[in-house]
Image (cartoon, rainbow, N blue to C red):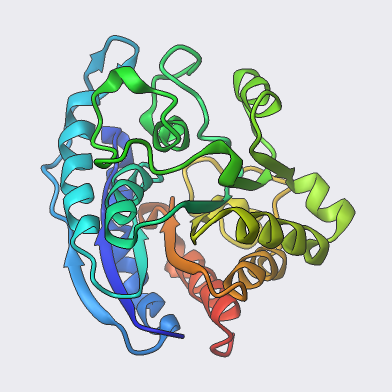
Length: 291
């Protein structure tokens, strides 16, 4: 599968989601790292603990996130392996990861984003001020006034090289943003109607034709909570593990997948680590390592 490195990014941006900071350790103990075979350990990004929330303008804990994002960016920028498996943490890891990898890997990055939610709000449209609900928009350069480290060449992602799959809980402003964007959007309902194989083929072709390399962001809540329930926002109507695996596998077959981010697992609500087991099984399906 090529030269893989693995990095832990135990980030969270709301104090009540502290459990997400333990996700990398829990998933690694469950065997997530072994799903890519022999890989170089790239260590963990160490963050200051977030104990109390602070609202800055309309964004919660913005200063904390700026500092954390800078640390993630520096770690990703120093990656020297051909491919990298990122074990998070909150979805907000993607801002620093993609900013840093855009310098480490060079060329135009494409993104396959699997998520029940859009993460495409901005400070002006967010109903909550939660950074985890804005992080994809941040990486696409839609929040220029926040002063985030995005890389020396500007935003690491462009809408025309973004494919969002599995949504079923978009806020109205996110629907409007996607409708006016060249990004491709396949809701969970569309995946089930068209079939995962067809969506996978279209998504892979779209990204392959427009990108020099591709990242995949796997928010595990894209999978229906009957399979993976240990997330902060379990939303019915999600993908089956086989459907999610089919889509990522097809992008992997392009030969351009160089980063896989695993995000949004919260071990503090995972009884008997059942969800951790399901997440590792999903990764095995993706990499065909015997699920």
